[in-house]
Length: 97
Image (cartoon, rainbow, N blue to C red; front, side, top):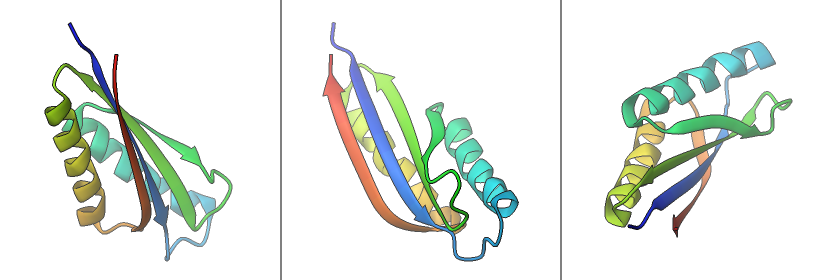
């Protein structure tokens, strides 16, 4: 039996945020949407005190490498399609255990 873990990181630039309170609203919206649609573990992982930049990390687990890869691509596409913030970088890693 093989276990596949997919890890992704999305870096965003938030143009219209003037405060950490405004940033939290946008970040929470992105995190909740990804979490609910893909049943992924999602969290803000960097730039917590910078109000115009954030980094969100997520992970997925399963037994099919292609399925995990496809879901990660769909998460990247969803985050972009939401239009709440500009994606400046994405990273992904898929690990077989």
